Amino acid sequence: MFKPGDAVVHPSHGAGYIYSIEDRSVAGENKKYYKIAMITSSLQYVMVPVDYIEKIGIRKIHDETKIDALLNTLNDDYNKEISYTNWNEFNRLNIARLRSGNLYEVVKLYKILKTLGKSKKLGIRDTEMLSKAKLMLISELIACKNISYKDAETLLKTA
Image (tube, rainbow, N blue to C red; front, top):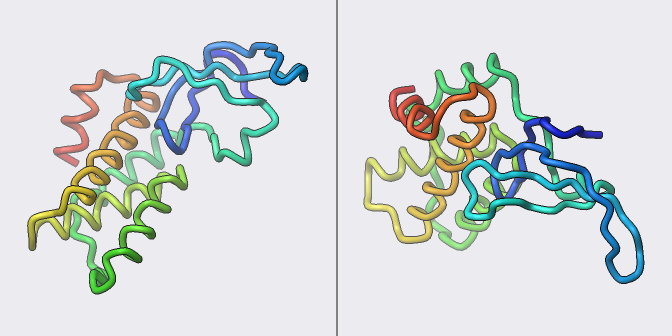
């Protein structure tokens, strides 16, 4: 169980901090909710039932060692063949990577789209997905390293 002040990652909204644990009555049933203050999301807070943390995929942020190891690989081109023959399948796979909340999958998505963008202009959805992956990475950098948005963005660019 998380406690107020813990840094966590929501797979849809990025990193944030447990602001509080609150009792809420929904449909006549009392449940405990985590109130998560989001770092880079357009939402100020996200309320998540304590019982659904695992199902949703909320996790603690990675430690600085793991983050640094991933940063060292970020700007390497994705050296596996990128199958773009079936765009719908490619898009579905990339959406699953992004929604997984798994930092390694988000980094993989970031690298695939950055590599693909070097050889051709990315479509609108791919560009949006790249921006979302970048935002997820920035939010985790902010929470892990306790740095500003601008510093996290610079760190991501220069990694």
